[in-house]
Image (cartoon, rainbow, N blue to C red; front, side):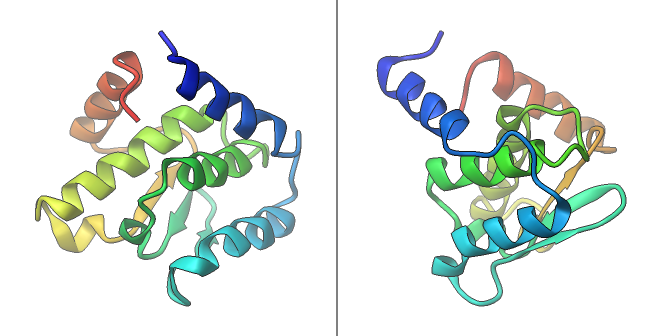
Length: 132
C-alpha cells in the first residue's frame, strides 16, 4: 500500500518521464541526473543490461526512481521502474554493508531479470513489501 508521500513521488516520476526514449536520449537524460554524483557516476547501455557506474553514490530515492523510469521507458526491458529501482537499492545496501562490495559498486540492471537467484528473490521481496 502506497503512503501519501510515496504516492506523490511515484506520480511525480510517472509524470516527469517521457513515454518513450531512444537509447541515446535515455543516456543523455540519465547522465544529466547523475552528474551531481561525480564524473564517474554514469550509465552505459549494453545488449542485456544497463550498468550504472558507481551507483552506490546515489542515495536519493527520487533520482534512483527517475533513472529507472527512463530505463523502463526505452523499450529495452519489460521490467517496471519500481523493480529496477529495488534491484539498484539492493546493490547499494550490499555495497554499504560490505557484502560483495567489489561487485556491488556498480548496479547492473538486467533487462529481463537478474541471473543471480539471490538477487531475484531479494528484489521480489523488496517489491512485495514495497521497500524502497
